[in-house]
Picture 1 (cartoon, rainbow, N blue to C red):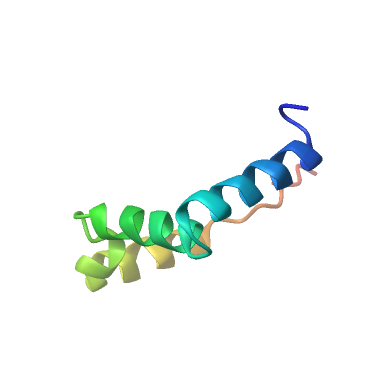
Picture 2: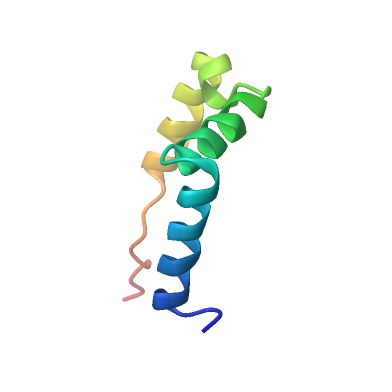
Length: 65
């Protein structure tokens, strides 16, 4: 049953039984703590400029008359 929804539920139940109910919360927290680049939040001005540029881009095609 590998790769099915049912198989995933069984695997999740097994993981929770083996490693505790907080298994997925723990591995998610570990992944979040491993990040070290800071993303856009590290440079707010860069984020502001990039967002402004993205906002000006039109998704509509130019109409040729």
